[in-house]
Length: 136
Image (cartoon, rainbow, N blue to C red):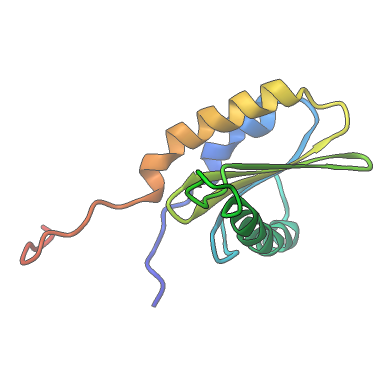
C-alpha cells in the first residue's frame, strides 16, 4: 500500500503565478510518479513526470563523468523551439519540473525554483521512526 502524502499542489502556486510565461509546474518522485502539480491537467503532469524520471537518470550518468562530482543532478535546462524545460533536484528522491514559454526570465525562474525547493524540502521527507515508539 502506498503511504498517504498530503496534497502539496498549493505549494507550487507561487512559482507558477510568480514567473510570467510559466506553463506547467510538476513535483515528481525519482521513479517518475507525480507528487503535485499546479494548473496542469493530470495527463500532462503524468507524462512530464514519467519523462523526467529518464532525464534525471541520464543527467546523473553524465554527472558521474566529472571527477569531483557526487553523481547527483542539480539542474537541467533544455531550450526547445517555443520555450524552456527546467528540472531541478528538490530533495531526496524528488524533482521539480517546469515548462515555460520562450520569453521567460531565466534568472527569475531559477531563483523562484531554488526558493521553492528550499521551502518544500521539509515536506518531502519524513523524520526517521524511533524503534519501539508508537504514534499517539
